[in-house]
Image (tube, rainbow, N blue to C red; front, side, top):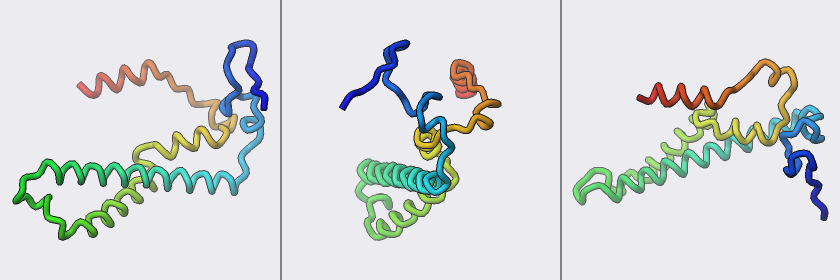
Length: 131
C-alpha cells in the first residue's frame, strides 16, 4: 500500500483538497442522508453521554440527604436526558454533526464561494463578547 505525498507542501492528500475525487463529485443524496443521520445520532450520543457524566458528578458531590442522591427517579431522568439529547442534536445545538458532515460531504462550489470565515477575527470577537 503506497501513500502519495503532495510534493509542493509535503502534506498527505486530504478529502478537503479541491483536487481529490470526493471534492470534485457532488455527494450521492442517499449517502448524504445516511451521513447526516449518522452525524446527528453521534451528536445525540455525545450530548447524552455528557449529560450522564454531569448527573454522575452532581450525585457524587451532593450531600447524603440531598435529593440528587435519591436513585428513585434515575431511570426516568436517564430517559429524559436521552430525549433532551436527541432534541438538541436534531437542532444541531453543539455543531458536532455539522463538523462531521464538513469532513464527510464535499462542499458545493456555490455554497462555499460566498462564505469567507476569518478565524482570527472570530476568536477576537468571541473573546470580547465573553468579557
